[in-house]
Image (tube, rainbow, N blue to C red):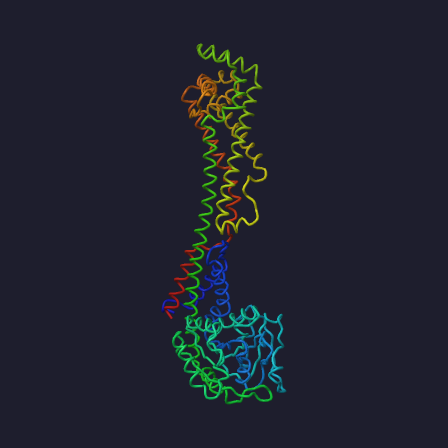
Length: 581
């Protein structure tokens, strides 16, 4: 810790790391995501079980966790350290399901609360006044008891250090293996037990390499070494430790020997290890150095783990952005196609064209265009006042045709987005078995309502434009519905994309609408009205399809997600904290 970094600031950083890791969600099925989720769980457990408790209580007793492979003799070793049976040993595996923590009676208050390993409940054990065989000592194996920690106060344990007998690291029980890993991650130092014929096994070495990355103090106990093989086996094991960066680990040899009638080792077999632990316990400054060394190494390793999570979160953010981009592109293209269909003359065919021709007629109305504008207005005004219904039929036909275009393009966008997402593992996971390749329920009714609202807004434009004294009489004579129908026709023919024989009919009919509007409002006003009406239609179509695309985008919304940059900042701060120690 640097001179300007207080313990309170360090604890505040660690608590922020814990909070943000807990809030980090990696929901997308990306390569490496499963490993990153495990990293998050392991980091949270280590913060809760070891790092935060140790930062808050640097003077607490050291926790020495005894771990190793199945049948390595961990429980027998622990019993030998205290001189009587306190943990169950035997041939039935696993013997250690419920971990036992042995401590000096004066150190009980450090472990009775939830200071360390807070996820495990506490059970107070007692030392039997009558000696028990090792096969009967300790709690009986119980799969349901794996969530608890048995505390045993024993004066044979030196004050200042506690010994925890952990389950097998390679247990056939998944829960046991997880618990063993959790307990080893909470250790200030490891007493790692292996045998002469199993010291090269892969599983223990993975944990020993993790110890090397944390710079944790390790004592390796080589158990059941046959007579005459001590030098050869210990030299080979020491060579392996040196190669893997564990050359400073203390190595203790326990020869192969018969157990006494109570299932205990001869007192001299574990005396070197026993003496070493007592020397550690008696040296307050040394204990503090061990605690700080392990804590510093663990924080450094945590920084690397948080950095990996930050990279995984960044990959998630990038993938989510790509999926969101696919959805937005598909629906944006759909809006563009809708607008193109409304300006290339396509809507002036079929039913819309027929209703418009019914409305304006094909004879007298066109001849009126050749007369002066006054006669034109008078004739058209009389025509409109006598036949209001045809204008409404034009509106209805436009609504029906425009609704069909919008529904079709919205369905195309949904199908396109669904196809793109299902071609990606992350998108496929988000969709699951849901079929989003069509429009949402009630979309047709929403589209129709939006079109009617657009038509209503268009009528209001005409009313507003016709409020002047000079034009009021004109638009009143032509009628709101008639002028509205004419404006819709003009909007839908602004680029005159008609070809072939239709241009003479539909194109000419659109010109009729434009001339009529110009006669009432003037040429500039007509262009302004048409532009405003088109922009309003564009905005309404955009809004409709943006709501539709939310069916996809909502699946990318992860409440409480933490930005990758925040996690990367935490990783850098943890590295600085470790480097300052």
